[in-house]
Length: 634
Image (cartoon, rainbow, N blue to C red):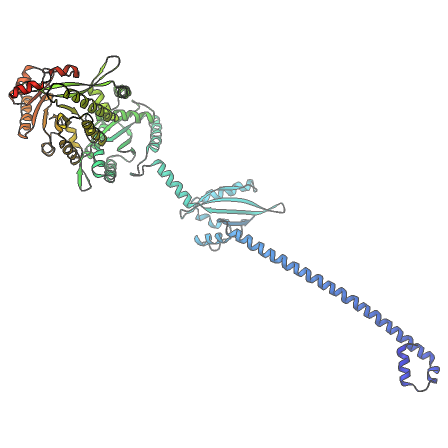
């Protein structure tokens, strides 16, 4: 019997017979108890297993949830990182689907749309009108219709003058084309820099004019048109005369202002189709297109010369700057741009040689002279370094006593083959090439050396004059060499006379005077050579510390046959006397000229009729002896 049933019977029954009498019933109840107990155990077991299973599933769900939260956090981080990358590319990124609908854009894209006031952009067509050339983008779309997977790139110009470079790539998901990604980068500053560099590469920084590179391109273009239409064109090579004087006296800033004013004046005369170009320094090249004749070119050049001849007000002072112009014409002179410029340049030098402030057309003779000049220049450089130059001395005679009073040192060039090159030829070339300073130092050295030799002989102290150009006289190196030579050879400054030409008047007179006074303190005196041929300014005669005035031989050659020449010569002599200067008559070639200058009381005479230039060995015996001078004094 079931234990639970037994405890219940024992607790409630007093009659033991009841258990016997109801044994079957009790057994059934006992079996029911047992069966119930068994059922409960089974139920408990089932509940236990179910609870465990639920706990396990709950743990699994918790783990899965934690994993999903981690994945979600990672995904959120990745999306944030992707968006940050998307926004920080420095580019506008726009994503469109296959229908051209805008499906995504980054922060720069949003800012871009705001900039152009397109706040409701839904398709790529929405900002077409904001492009300078909308057809450019439409052509790209047509290309995509033929090849949807094509990569695109280029530059778009916006109506607000901004520029954007772009790249367009197909967007592919699971092997299928789903749209396109467009990336735009603002390259406005880069374009501006490129434009600036481009401009600077082809324009002069001071004047803004085309430089040589752009000029050549324009000439080539104009030549092509002229050949096709059978027209003429001209190239003018213009070089300012005496521009260096402004730079030296007023400074480079003033020189720059003068150049800018020159440009302004030139542009007032040129036509719209003409090109004015600065080649550097004070050189300009002008392209005249579609000219009718050389007379038309001459007329333009004369107008230009007249414009430039007018005074320039620079740095509170007026300056006078003329120009020399060389001209080459297509098709008569050449059909090549560089060659036309070169030939115009050659013609310009011919204008310089003719006295400046003029114009000259190119000719084959001009080029032949230039080649000859180049050959002489090359030979002169060798001559200077090889010591082919030497000095000859021409005596000057005191016209009162007819005794030699001094000598003039003259530079001569005799080539190894015995040929002599005229000083008129090689001195001019030396001044143009800068060799004149080297020649000047040689003349000073040899002159001082020769004076020292004569000082050691039994003759009077000899005075020798040397010629210095304005270029040499303004050279600090050469002036220092002159002073050092006096000390080196132990000679007195009073034994040197420096002869200057009237071209010195065109330089900075204050600086010239300062140098002259400084040398004057050393005993050196000065003579003005070729008076009457150049500027003949009386004010300069008074301003500069001069001691001698030389009458140019050009005024003495015709005095016998030309009364006007005789009058001019006499006037110059009188001017010299009235200014307290000793007057030297040069170029005396016959007795009539000698009698004339003696009668008009010239102090000193010089010329072939009296003495020719000679080597120092030949001049030495002619110099007055010291004992003779002492004897005359006694």
